[in-house]
Length: 369
Image (cartoon, rainbow, N blue to C red; front, side, top):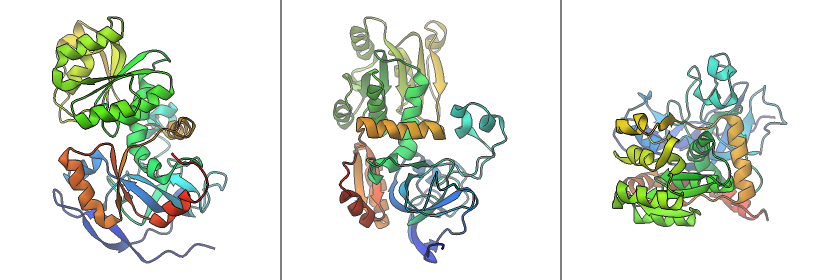
């Protein structure tokens, strides 16, 4: 018997570009497609991409409910969803993409390419309604069931920030004992990348230009933290000092600062790789890093569905934590956005949409991360 869903739900929507979210009642999603899930949202998270949606960068058809980082409980499943995969009551991390085509070169290629499908039906919170709502429709093939010890508050930011940082670490192809630098190490993505790398035995140098970021980098377990405000000459000297004179084996850049990509290349050893994750308008790198130092620059997106499941297992096993700034209720989204834009937020901003399920989680007796 199908569960009863309300006709309307509360949602935070972009109604006009470059204007604040509007919080109002909208129709509740229902009638899931064959592979869909309807999820009762427990926690939704704010991401840098949400600001790009509001600015019109993706030419999103408006109105659109925000947030592509959500976690919650399955309320309804589509006709082709196997109960062995998902059933009503399961706790899930919401997948971003909806209905990949399954036919293009990316879908039929390597597992790590499947998130690049360009023939899907959109991305929640970006080109279709997202998780800043009481309910959201997602694709079961992209979503992931939560390990028992991973909380909703941890899982929501992992849906994009975690998947993005994890993919960057995987793409570096480093082995245990090698050195990785994270430029922007004290941000929402950076502190996760540091913890993921440490879980794989990789040594980490975290570089940040904020006192809050440097502190969070230390708390995340970075072996070395360096202040980017002291300049590239200082950073290169310090990095080479701890890496035996070579520089890091690879570097991940998650900072939008104009000079961040150049800094990331500068601290990387000759013939090393720099993974560009940040999305500034232009990525500026002096030519000598490419030509005279043979630095290879690779872009990276979110991870694939299978990689996301492995990430959650690593989070559970190594008790990886997400620094969150929680706000209670969808009505608080404007306050969260204000904090995020202030530059003073440490970690990720989240909204607790369903506090009752948070309390039930705490009473479960399971030690949560």
